[in-house]
Length: 324
Image (tube, rainbow, N blue to C red; front, side, top):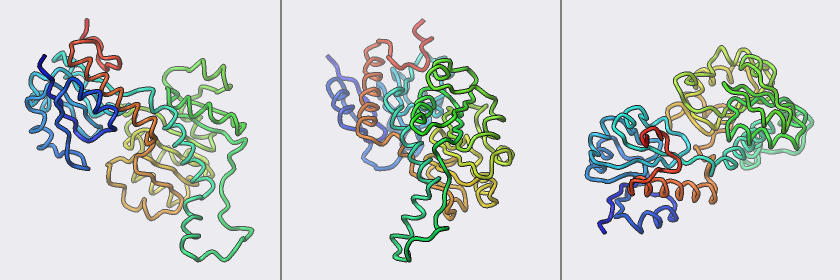
């Protein structure tokens, strides 16, 4: 039986490569960086399918270059890099990797929340500098977490997991979402409120929405003016959900107490001035970076792509309407 030709646009955990390798000849990027657009268009030619990343734009131009391809599997839960409408029009399946990174991402949101509220990175830097002179009553005072109000923006899988982890800290939970999450309300007493209410009343705001036209720049300078000056913002969703220049301005002006970020508007770049601020914790998009999550993502991507190549329904298909 002929083997499928598959492009892997950046090396993924071996479990996924081993699964694909049983039926496919793999062309794996040799670079520890994203493909340039020209490289991607060149490399995808003649392939039966590809494992793509969020940095790979899967649009009409790419689909033209990959004429005859049977599908594309995103190694990510997000899929704003994929033109679903165009792929659907051509009958080409697309997939993502939901579920396997839910808990890891929620854990990272909590790690950022604690780090910025308790000034962990800032105080770590002082210790490493050798400039700490001993305990002082007014040194590194941060925000209280136990008993505070947590606002969840987007109560899907990850947002709900973040909310559930708050029960050990006796937090009041508000959430804003286009759809009510009755299970979350019943389980922890979360309250469904408009976004305006959430940002006004929350001590911590954690963002978990997908990047859509209606969520781009959901948080701008005007939003920050509505938040408590003692509030903290955490974003592990997508960078462009925040207008990053406005966040820098808000942090400088003390409109909010601090922020914890794992994603950025123009990755891998940050907004000017962000890195210089002491009241922000910045991580390099590592929310899913646990062994279990990344292996799970690799296995899911491989499973989805193999199904596409065989002409079967992909388990995590983003455009199932192509199957009729």
